[in-house]
Length: 273
Ligand code: PEP
Ligand code: MN
Image (cartoon, rainbow, N blue to C red; front, side):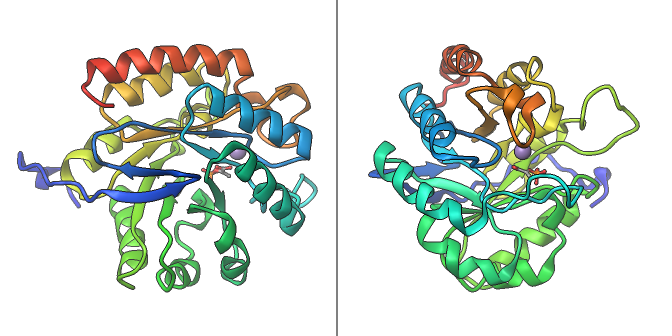
């Protein structure tokens, strides 16, 4: 889609309903959703303490990687299926749902009972076999933007999932590669405004991967709230220096708590709940 095709007409949103514990979340319906948790589920203490802390401080949905897409095969790959018992235990304990990434179409069935929302990661946005398989099931999908993908390609990937007529899609902007290297990625807030006005998809912003530095994450999270995104997804860890993945971008508990106070003020100003 060429920029010259952008008109002034606004398109109305599709509201995506998610069951998170005993809550029903309506994403895209004017309420701001905070999704928080560790990059990867590492062990019971790490996951349980994080999940309880973010819940106590207003997160409506947990995040936590079970299978991790890592650049090097030598890096921590996630606990895999072993983490699923922890997912069950901690989501029950906190009365929360969780979003977690599925990388392989063969894992969809196994992950299905444990998640409120499937995540398709940036590296898999173009994995059409995975998208087609997700189109055959009925849980919503959080589709992250490929880090080198056009918005138009991202939307076409969303359509792969929707064409089955069963699963709804929420888009997640998580930053793209640009010539700039001072931060991990460049968080494309233009795309967020575009998705908001010109497509029917709810849009969540992931400032953790978008900027990659914990000091800067809250600023980008607040910017996302200010421009009317439908929510944010942030990584939180009890001890970021010890994290097995993405430690440099993980918020500490105090950082998350301060961010939530500020987010609540911003969403009040922009008229979200
Ligand atoms: C994640 O959310 O843990 C993740 C791996 O993100 P991305 O696919 O955006 O890199
Ligand atoms: Mn991560």
